[in-house]
Length: 237
Image 1 (tube, rainbow, N blue to C red):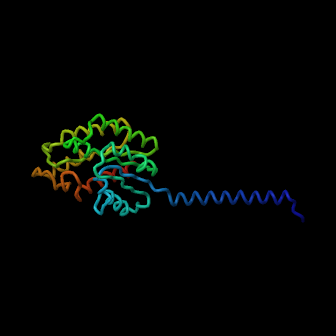
Image 2 (image 1 turned 60 degrees about the vertical axis):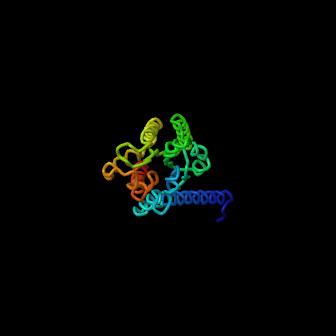
Image 3 (image 1 turned 90 degrees about the horizontal axis):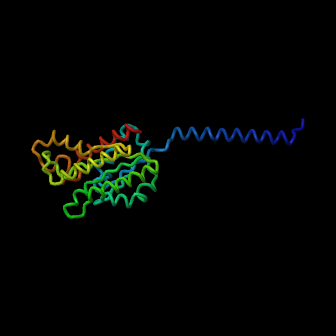
């Protein structure tokens, strides 16, 4: 029995269609088994720069995820540069953050904006709020989620006698308000560090409780930040 050209053509089309369907099913199965990891960029100053070190808070987050068997689900990228203020973050946002297509951006900045006022190189409140808002809007336009962190400490005394306490509280409040106004998650490290120090810093020391030098984190400080951010990251995915 002879097979017509039309029948051969129809058979070929059926075979190709089935092959395409099989390929799509295989691709979907592979995607479900190997989903794209959530890319998180930690954007900040020297505290974040040190966060990728051996005992840094970003490294600690990675280890915690690994212990839970979740390390393959996350891609953690540190993007901290010592001395950075909010204006510096604004200037390098495109290259260091947006170009990497993050799913989540953690912004941890503000210490230098306050601390450097002592040398006349800090950031005024209105400029801080303006540039911070611009950074938020540009990240949101890219479709990424945002976690805002309040600056933790510049001195660890619990009686608000640290020289920059007033400004640090005010800039933290600016960040809290921006989180509400822009529907961003908030990791209130200022509040968290103060609560910890009230409980553990009974001698009212200026450093050595959660920092090595009044600003940069020791192991306990890094652990406190890591735990707080990990809760934000896992609780909101």
